[in-house]
Amino acid sequence: MDLKECEILGDRQDEHWYYAGKLGALMRCLDQPPERILDVGAGSGFFARKLLERTAARTAVCVDTGYDVERDEHVGSKPIRFRRSAAADESDLVLMMDVIEHVDDDVGLLAQYAASARPGTRFVVSVPAFPWLWSAHDEFLEHRRRYTRRTLIDAVSAAGLRPVASFYFFAAIFPAVVARRFWQRRRAAAQAASDLRRHHDLTNRLLTNICLAESAVARRNRFGGLTAFAVSVKD
Image (cartoon, one colour):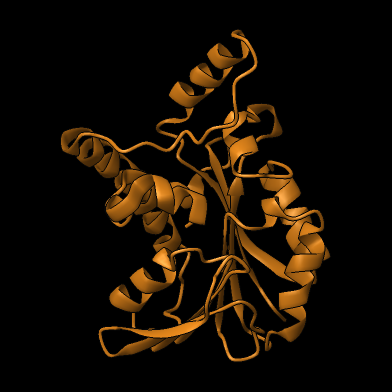
């Protein structure tokens, strides 16, 4: 979870529909349960924490250059460490959830972690989809680019990983977001700002249920959505 968005959502982070939906899609990427998780660009550590709660994973390391201090915590009895840097050599699952779009050299970042990973390590990468959806939201989060499913696969492959699955997510809300983005473009240049908002509990619950229902079939979606996912393995 991006540290900037943590500030927006405050204590509502864990229950927000966007992250609940993305967690549902992530869970569908796990063909086998992980044991040791490395969450790169982890922010609050949302995804690592939830996987420790919901799977048989035993440990997690969250890496983010934005951490002021390094620290150790626990999720139940399971250790979770927060570090400014770490290699992938002790992990069997590497998460890069909305990370590589923030750096100039996305392939280089992927290759850095691929090089230190052991054979058989799984990588799950998510990115914002479709360059033509660029908006003030991307400016606020300091994105360098948006991706198609094809360009994401190309980046993963160029880094030395073997893609095993790719798909789009958030298709259910895709038409509404597309309409909003085009409407915004017809107005004066928008100031950089996040699209993420707190919502009324009923609205949040409805959107959560819609996204969780979509997550059950998301891996079949080759057509469109707000987010692109790629699952790959280090051979």
